[in-house]
Image (cartoon, rainbow, N blue to C red; front, top):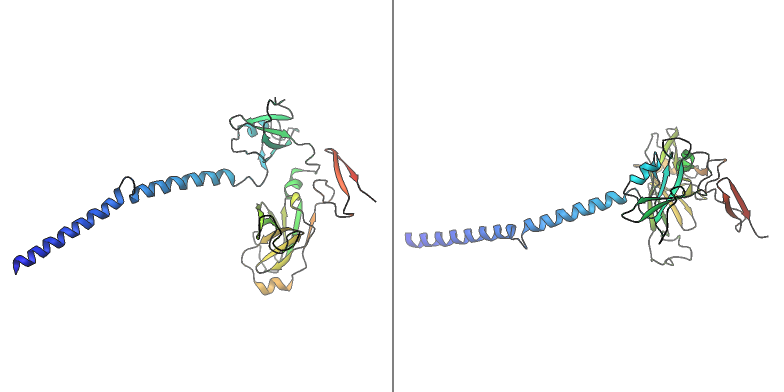
Length: 286
C-alpha cells in the first residue's frame, strides 16, 4: 500500500514539474513566449505614442517667435500653417504667416518669400500674404465668438469639435456622402473662454470655423449647423432642465472691423477676391 502511494505521489510530482516547466516555456520561449510578445507590444506602443505626439497639434497654427525658430522645428508637416511673430526678434515688426508645403522640383527658395525649413523631408515655408487682414493675431486665433446661455450657475471649461457630413446633414441627402454614413473631417478646435456671468459663456475660436448659425442645446451639448458642417461645444456635466430653459438664447458672430474669413452670406453668388493683404475685390452677377 505504501509503495502504491509513493508511486502515485512521484507520478503526480512529475506531472506538476512538467506543468511548471511548460508554463515557464510559455513565458520564456524566444519566438512565441509571453515575454517576447510583451516586448513586441511595448515597442509598438512606443511607436504609436511617438506618432500621436507628432500629429496631435497639426489641426491648428504653429506659433514661433522668429523665422529661425520655425526653421529649427522638425515636427512641421506638409499642409501645416505657421505663424512667426518676428523675423530676427520677437515683435520686430516683421511677423508673417506661412504655408508649409513640399518643395517643388528644382525650386530654389529665395529665403524671403519661400524658406527651407526641413531639408530631410524636403519642406519649405511659403509666405501667405493674402491669408490675413485682421487687426491682430488675437483676432485671427479667437475672432469667432459662440455665446451660450447655459444657465448652469458655474464657469465651465469648453471643449469644441468641428466635423462634416453628420447623419442627416449630407449635402445631397441622407447617406449621399462619398464615405457613407457618419461624420468626417473631425477636428478638435482650440478655444478660449470668457464669462459674462455664471450663466453665460463666450467661447472664442479661430475665425475660419465661422458658421452662419446659433447654438442649440441637445443631449448634453450645444450644436451649430450650417449646411453639412457642424460645431459641437461640450461644457462638461450639464443640468438638462436648466439648459433647456434658456435654449435658443445664444448667438455666434465674427469680431467686427476685420477682414479675415468674413463669410459673405448675401447674395449667394457674391465672391471676394484678394488683391493684396489689405484689399479685396467683390465680384457678383445680377
